[in-house]
Amino acid sequence: MIQFQYIIIDWYHKNKRDLPWRTTKSAYVIWLSEVILQQTRVEQGLPYFHKFLQNYPFVSELAAADEQEILNDWQGLGYYNRARNLHKTAKEVVEIYKGEFPSTYSELLKLTGIGPYTAAAIASFAFDEAKAVVDGNVYRVLSRVFDIEEAIDSTQGKKTFELLANELIDKKNPATYNQAIMEFGALQCVPVNPDCAACPLQFQCLAYQNKTITQRPVKSKKTKVTPRYFVYLIELSPSQTIRIEKRKEKGIWQHLYQFPLLEFTSIEEKQSYLASLKSKFISKEYKHILSHQQLFAHFAVVEPSNKIPENQLEIALSELSNFPIPRLIDKFWEEDSGLVEGL
Ligand code: SF4
Image (cartoon, rainbow, N blue to C red; front, side, top):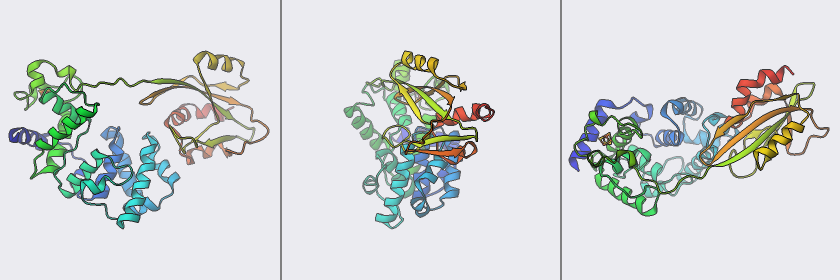
């Protein structure tokens, strides 16, 4: 085990990327980076990390911010629940802990939006608690080096991996070890075609010896992906105003703004609606993939109805960028707003 720790840490010192959150002991900065980087690539997350630190240098400023402001800053990162939880956690840190993050794994876990992974990351990186982080990278490395057949998404599997990860952690150096194993998974033991010939763990790696690398890690459940069929109506007036509404219902994009939306139960139903629609312009189909849903959306420019429904706002076309909107609408707007403006 000592050899495993030694090899991983040695590899890390030679190969690590220079990332700004690795040079700090600030729990706030570490937490911010962890929340931004969940389900996000480092290159995509970096500008958001800098933006958030610039706009909210302290947790008290994040807690005092308006939710819409935070959603605006988050725009483009997706998974907006993370942004809402970010805000809730910041408020709790200010209200319950007087603006100082708690310093132990078990106390950190009590905060809204902080799960075992983030709690372990903050506890080890900021406070040097010997608590192992177990993220997708760690699951992959451990499942391969120890050739573990147990599914990483089963209750028993999760326990097995957590136990093993905590046995392996370098207790004198938990922060560096945790960073090292995650970085090793991100750069060396990658999901597809890892360069095993250049790997310092090759001689210990049981999956390499047993030729089971492509089967590790094992997952038991297949994610069910539901297709959804959308038509967004852009009610464009002669004075170049449009209407938007805030999504109130729970689920994707809660509290973000959108054009009035119609949803259909099948592609046929949507096609027949579009064929009968009196529209000045119908966009191409925009496809947007989320973890459990595939969205197929069209945008249609139509005459505005006489009365504005209570839940809608009328705004100038140019004002849309002041509102937090889903990435799907943003994509359409980047490509086709010129066409709409010219109608
Ligand atoms: S030998 Fe290959 S599969 Fe095993 S740890 Fe190294 S990179 Fe990963």
